[in-house]
Image (cartoon, rainbow, N blue to C red):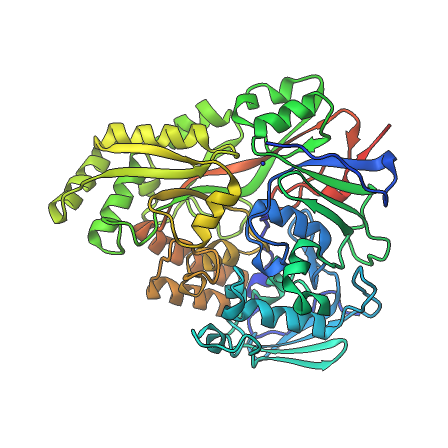
Length: 546
């Protein structure tokens, strides 16, 4: 997912808000629809799911969906919000009622028009639990959402709060104030879908029809995903290249070797083995800028000894305080990551180094041993502590390092658990089948603390309905998030977000580790490398000289 920066629209309150009214094998490009002169090959990983925007919550699929679809709004490099398909989004009644006006003339790549029905039908499909879409929780504040989460829900049931007034107007009624709604409107979950998506979802997921900067060409599984510039795109992100070819790798080292050998144009995944040298490599162009990605590991609620109780909290805190984040950042990340101080990233306005309880994120082996002993007095420890990760990513070294810290500090058996591919790893995470802790992290879909906190830790995002894969549930935290969404200003909202974070620092459903920089490298022929507000690459800006 992409990382975003919060804006003043996060807490619009009761005022009327109007937005701009008015990874092993490599692929080879074989597209006949683009000029060979400006085809950009970029690092990719096999998407975990078919290419439905509402079911895309990981980087492999997220990079692809971002280029194919256009939503109501887009975000600029500073986190500002700009209308895309929306002409205006107007809020009233204390941010519980929104009226969305669409621009005319937009169409999908099959030639059918993008209308209010395109959005509403897509939102209903994603929100309905019968369709098992991972981003269902993004619609939790719209009236009728709870009814769509019932076990026996009709797959055709819809959100009662959504009304298509006409082809260019959507009326949205919420069950509670949600001042972040206009910000969420540019996320994957809110992308429109054509009628063909519902007639044959299986076919659509493999060959999507979209309305964004690029038009889908092909998906050769575990090999490549190709797309060409969409000549009918009418939005803010017009591509400067003719085509993108996402070459799918199962190893960042293989991708980096291809880059150095001239067989790949761009990667934003620098392997651990190259972190000390990529910025001084004269054969490449290197990039290292502040970003918004967070790196964590999750300890799911269902693991023995780690329930949401006193023993579980003591053990989580002990494990967190066993880890020397600063040393690992220096030895492994080499200036591309900074130790976490909260659950957010520095570009987010609610980010704070002064949260009550953040001492659990500091290395303190003696305190860690004390807390572990208190937990043992409640229930003696047995077994091993494992952290799973996908071996086709860049987690191996840091996972092994923190396992060593945990083992040496707490005198327990702690080990890393590699899983061969991102697809296998994410399938187990999404289905709740993990039997250990596991690597996690976040690059949010929209510029708001809401996306870091509500979508990852609120009860509405648990049970397969969102990013709360560890099934953490705390009514006190949920209530604080509701207060943030009802706040009349960003400053007021940030106070509630921070109070919610202080609850998370006690419970530690995930262990914050580091905030990662935006790092990338390209061949010398590539220009236009830029990053969005959260550190994700802007693929539409890439060009290549011959």
